Image 1 (cartoon, helix red, strand yellow):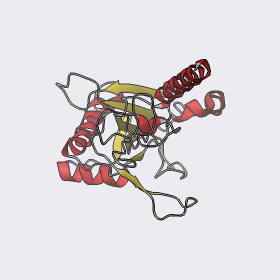
Image 2 (cartoon, one colour):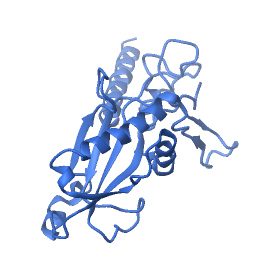
Image 3 (cartoon, helix red, strand yellow):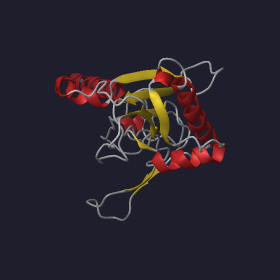
Length: 239
């Protein structure tokens, strides 16, 4: 059904650690200017949210600064931030029309963290990041965990913190799912079922969210759509 099965990649907002040294370690004007946008996310690493998983299910990002929230000024102390995104969220949302006016924005309900698997992922991810930061040489740099703080230990406490800090990294997909069943919106040629002359060529056709950024997948979908449209055109011209 159109608008259903919205998948998106949630990001647990931040685990912030105060740095024990008062001396400038990294944030020089030269480095900030030279790296430009890369400055905001210098270290990226795939990882498993818990031991024993047969596959990587998360991406972790380390940033050399700490802020209270998106769009706010950095804290007045030396710190760094680690955030984690979930590669394969199982929660599904919905996109609906508010009314019949085409210019009005739709109602979007992402429904993040509504499945037990997704809740367990972020609880495990917080604990995994904490374990990594307790290893050398990181343990010699960190003065204290700022957020969520050493008092946040139990599953429900961690989950409550994640709910407050989590947001999207803008990978929405799946609301016009491709497939061969009656509930799918487009067929294998990206044609909308029941509508003549209309195709969909964006991330909404993806039956399942990819484990990484969806940009490359969207490029592939666009290229494939172009090939399909050209093939239909050539066939029509031949006939």
